[in-house]
Length: 164
Image 1 (spheres, rainbow, N blue to C red):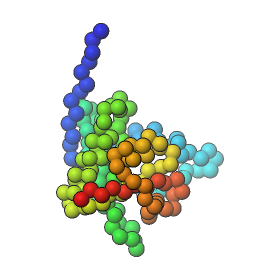
Image 2 (image 1 turned 135 degrees about the vertical axis):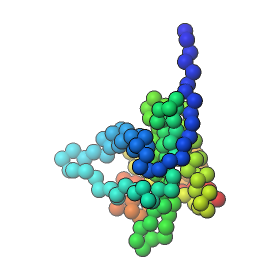
Image 3 (image 1 turned 90 degrees about the vertical axis):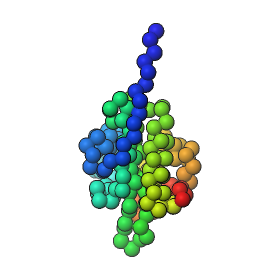
């Protein structure tokens, strides 16, 4: 029996509009979207996605040159609310799971946040993503009240973590 070596993972700081990052987000949408489907009721309301201008950095893991994982740091400004910094779109492609890449992606975003003077991060996930909630809690994130704009969604779970 031949054991194949796992491809080496390289992390790259890039932007929200990087097609490799966008491709991973598309895979995430295809996987997670059906969990929130409401047959006959139309799509669930959701806030607009981040713009490239709001994203400080998108981290991309390449495994043997193939996009494997991503997570981004977003500056979230909502009218009438304090500016918040949040982690967006943590995702690992199915072929690259169980290697610790999601935790590594979180740490990359946390380091980037410290680099721009952020001492507390937030993130939002959905209540039908138990694997995401388990990851965040395992990595030291604590549940916090749902914050705008996710307070209008109805299925949000929010977390916070001091990173300063």
